[in-house]
Image 1: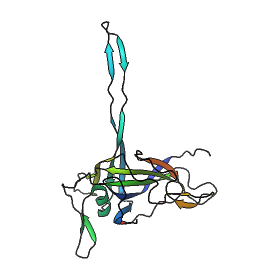
Image 2: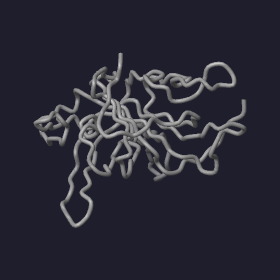
Image 3: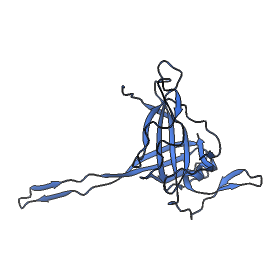
Image 4: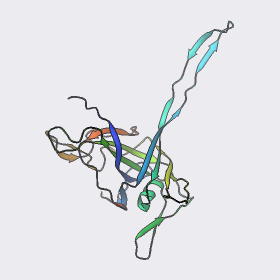
Length: 233
């Protein structure tokens, strides 16, 4: 089969899924948030430089050269929120949501005692595809899809009150090895028997050492809502 090349543009929607401290999706009533309340997501490589060994002889000539390689540890994940969705912030940072007398979720706390090692989250990001609206010969639209299956360490960053939008931020989060995502708990692409129109999970499951996967999909992303929804067993 031919290789499909593509260019991703413009973030469309994200989905954050609550994980336990070992990277397993948490079944529960408020485990999933599908949102457009994100301004930016920034991904940076986290690496540790190797050790270079270089020795010179008494003529000041290099006689031993053995340079080490940098080791990639993971990828840092920072995000700026566009508005406030307390459930989304809670999933990503572990902070508790606040309810009013009617039982509505109306805010969140910033608590410095949150143990960042006891939880994580998975992040899926859908983007548009430049110059390719649909699968050739069909009405199926193409999307860029990136999944980060295991992220830990998310903290609330600083913000300012000013004559403008008040923007909260996620900072310090980093991908981890040991995810338990597999093919994922959701349908994200079309597969099954040719002509491949049946929605289904990832065709190739993620390895436990995969920090993120980026691919082209033909299944429309989920619809963004305010607040969290359940993840069924």
